[in-house]
Length: 290
Length: 256
Image (tube, rainbow over all chains, first blue to last red; front, side, top):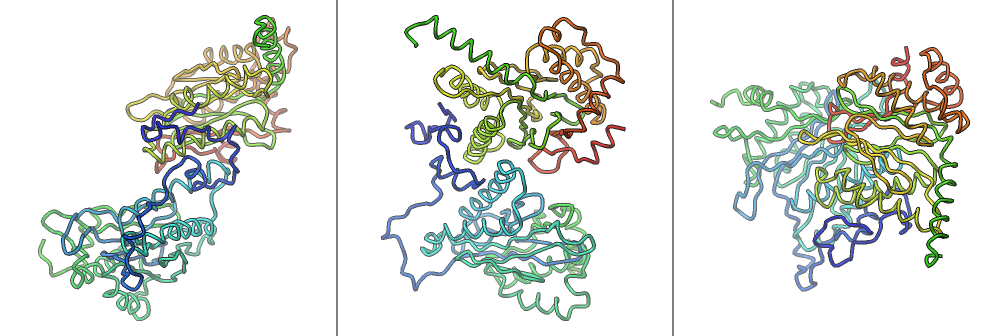
């Protein structure tokens, strides 16, 4: 008897006992557990809906950016969600906390991206709870790779591609060292460590060069900036992106919608408050009247 | 055997005696509340005994390690899947106990040809803003007991009664801080330990009144072979997961 009150499973498909009699192999793998519970991890599309390979263009209308600063990583995103040329929503959260020391910034199909973030969060927790230890940094990176690869068929059909930036803080870093780490993924799930910064989404092409400039020739190098300096730099970058990219929103003064900024540091993931953002935005845009 | 009711009852009784005998020397577990949450405490030898099940649920047990592990995974898996399919707020101890754990305990206990679970389990659930804290004890036969403020599990009922008596007699107010809660739980554990080391007949008749000095002697002796393990569900924890184990530093501090 395993009754979980799930109406979709009333037919009996998900009614097996989970552990004691079923004897599933225990290695703390949350995806195995979901498969066992008959949770549909993939959306199956009929083959005729597949687009021609050559036409594929992964939609990722947004701008998300992460920079390594003095205390760790600052990771940020604009708030606009679009469909074609329409603005659908202006309060989208594109930077999501995954656990105490990691956050994910998403560009691409929101439905799949949120699902990936959710599976990731639950996977890390499940590993810790079942195996009685935290999943290693490399283990966390691999988990995200697997999820992106699982989603490949959707990405290839041009409707569900997701390209995230993953920011973590490595607690094993020396006390005086910076444990902040930024990883960038491609559509196949390969991950690359970016040392100073990463940006993705349709607006990213407008700011990548600026980031490079700041990192290399800026008055204060990105990795030496304090929280305030890094936040001001990021607010300016997102402002540039919104200037040239229709799918990226700027600061909306009428309703006070700011970009999302989070810090990933030794003390955990923190969201920069609206009050701080308002003050820093005024500094970032000295000529703008509120 | 089922068509011979007397033999079935006898077999169940034998099984009960066997399991109780196996459990008698188990290291007791104490659950108490404090101003910021709930605590489970025990002394363990090498194997971990206090576990995180879900955001607001912790578990401990006495019994055979393999049975503990199996049932711990059953409830952890169930909570993880349900928390993912619905929302983590939809997970509650009442449902996990009544629909998942208690039936599994009862079934194993009464299937007299199958293997028995040698286990007594104690779970704690930190109440949300609307709900209340709850301790839930599940006996090997599937009988469930709940209490909002404290709970114990020990090898036999006599041990448990002795521990409960101590808890109710010494109970400081529910607003106690972490250190006071830790000391109260540890002392109660020592009472249980003392009772389990006595012969069953003695345990029942003898007075369980112990001097504080005696209690701490028992604890000191026990610490030579094992380690104090305490886990808390703490409302003030950042994030959704409220469970953490006390660090050895915190334990040393609280013992001073």
